[in-house]
Length: 298
Ligand SMILES: [Zn+2]
Image 1 (spheres, rainbow, N blue to C red):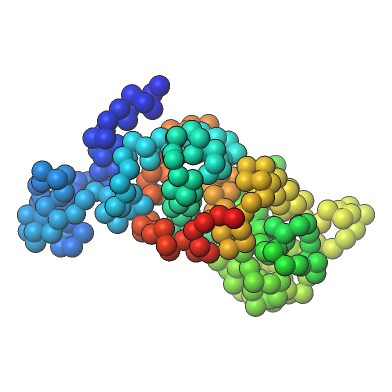
Image 2 (image 1 turned 180 degrees about the vertical axis):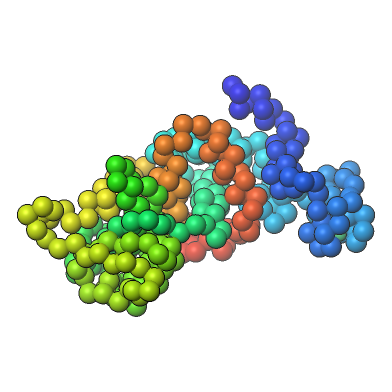
């Protein structure tokens, strides 16, 4: 109800984006001037350099032929569903004719779920890699066609799990794992892994590395936080997406899962909505043909 009232018109959606994009008023993307007027075609005309731009140019919504209201409704639905939504589910809700259109929307929005230059994890961080996809998920060494190796990093907050980072890696060698950890974990942190040799070359100037070895205390469950996140991730891929995630598209799904997991305790859908639209106007637009791995789902 509140959502429908707030975004009752195309103009209301536009104003919402204007405020997110230019919180201190319009600024010309070309010359930086703050003087402008709005033309009859709703374009911002720079008074200094005559450049014309729309409020959606350079955002996810650039060149869309559908109303912003429909985009907003899609985003609202995406953030409302605790476990996310499949393209087919969203197609039903919005009444779209073409599955492909909504599939592309979802992928565009997933690119907005990861903030550019986001913070790395810090404190004590548990790290491991798992295979995702294919017939059977499992541990290293049992790799097979159709599976992707994903590095999972989880903040250990003592009483609870903090934030996570997920990254696809080429293999479990030190050459793959060390940079993935570097991109996910802040220097100065404690990194906890098992005794796998791929973790043996972490720079000791950056991290305090703790190796957990099998013992009576931990048994087989050396890294309980990573195992828990891995189980939830697999369940999500199986449940919400019925496992129909192509390996070449996995990065997008990992981004969505990270977005959802790191905000799992947020009670406010309004806040999630705000965050996603805010990021959608701050990341570069993606053309359908640029979606990595091809645009049609199997
Ligand atoms: Zn200008």
